[in-house]
Length: 567
Image (cartoon, rainbow, N blue to C red):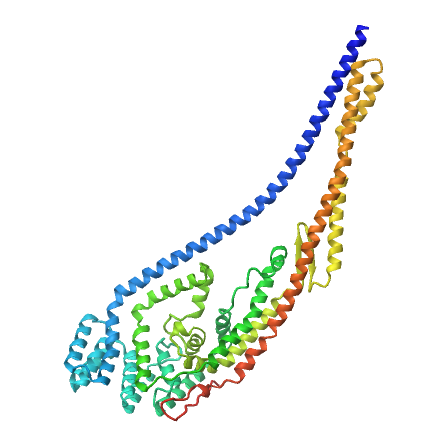
């Protein structure tokens, strides 16, 4: 009787132990499942974090580039002020002397003293002896005037010739003005022109020079174009030159547009590039149309118009300042491009607005596309576009063809490890079916792997074996019960996992389907917008076809019209 009581007590203890083991196993199973889920979430979070970190590093580098460029701009401008600030006094005096003569409010000896002081303050500057020459002319001191002119020519023959051509035109001395212009023309090579040529073109396009001088300018410009057009590869060079100039007007696409395409399509970079290229058509059209339709408000009189040109001539084109001006321009572009140094350097290399020794067609490009940097007036912009219209049209046609060829035919969509393709979003049903099949195969694969492991089958075999051997032995019977329990618990877990797996993959499919439909909707909207923007390409050629150079050479100061041709 006591043996039976002990046996019953042992069995109760074993049963309790088995129950505790069962609870522990279930707890461990839940924790393992939770750990697996957390591991998956952690890997996903790490991927997102890594991408965010890379973007943070990129943005941080861009911000630092902007800050450094702004600091360098301050430094460069301070250096310009320190090294060449005294030139500013000379420049102001030049215009001041002319206006003082108009008003007759300043004594001649005051002008002479001021001019002499500027010569002493700027011993290498070409404009200083020009002031001496002006004051000497006012005092009828021919000998001093001639000496000052010779010194000014020695320092900078071209600028001095152009300066006195404008000054004499301002005073109504047509013959002297033509003589100075002829001297200036004789030094020009259309392959190696300096930036101050814009002053000549401005004077020509705004009608500041007299009829004969303007006619001579027109013939000179035509001769330059004829000479340059005879060079081998000229047309190809113009196309490339204008392609770069037009492309510099491209604007970045709004980052909030087509969010699903951006996130789920590896084709997005090509799509973005193509749409930005298509939008460039309207940007170019609006830019040229604004210039060509802009009203030119003439200066109130000839003196005022000449003073504006003289101010540009004496302020903007001194070669000594050129290295610092280049550095200034590059840093301005870095700030403009929000720290993107590569893009800024590319733009700087192509625009060439702070370079000397450029050919005439490059200067026409600069006048058309970079008017502020090249100091071109609206009239000069109009004339430059008219003279370049054939090259602009060819370059724009090339850009249009290249952009259309670069547009992807098929757009890839990637959702995890599934990939599909769509041209215009019309194959929604086909892609949804493909996605469903893909997820179904993944689910079936996971279900196949959701099965009893070797330990469970070993436990079953061991349980049966120990049961047969342990009919008369309590210990073996207990071991048999434990082994059988392990098998049964594993079977329960497998069946429970089936429901979880099926539910998870149903949610995955529903989520992926929603993303796929939204991405296809983006594709439809993208194709529609691209077609609308691409159709605007013809507007550029239609606008330029109506333009002729002689439209923009009319004089507001006399009735003559200079006619030139770009052919």
